[in-house]
Image 1: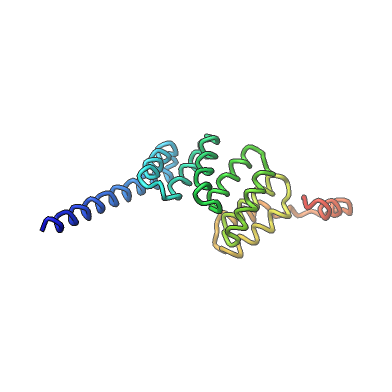
Image 2 (image 1 turned 45 degrees about the horizontal axis):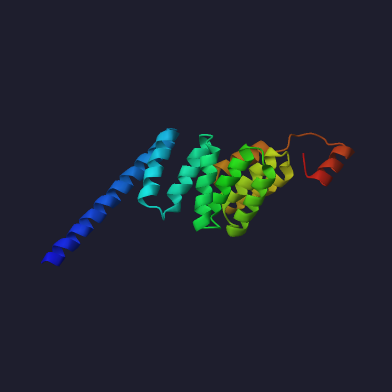
Length: 187
């Protein structure tokens, strides 16, 4: 009888902890959707502390930190994920965006190349590669990655929006402009 009561108590406590985590997770997602980023980061930090093995929570902390321009915390958090999961594409992409926002495009490219090797069919990796090229004026390369992202996920709104923004302006290019585009890959 005593064993049954103990097991029942453990199950009840586990269910309560699971419910609390689910409630925190719901509140964190709602905070992100409402653009209450500081609140969301705090909630994801609580979730990560309660479940350190869950890299998704830590990635959200890194992502939110980067959106809040707290780049050192973002990089530290993504690096922490990469220590336990070296090929984590989400952490690599998150760290690459921080590098892009700091105009360290070579570093971003290296991180995204690693992410692409780990997850070649990940739409978010392809979009990040497209943005990195676009930020450098390499719109031909950016369009290739957008095309790949849309092949993977034809309904992806971000990829469709980026495709529209990368659409070449209708213009008749002269010989030298065509030669420049052919040699440099830049528009």
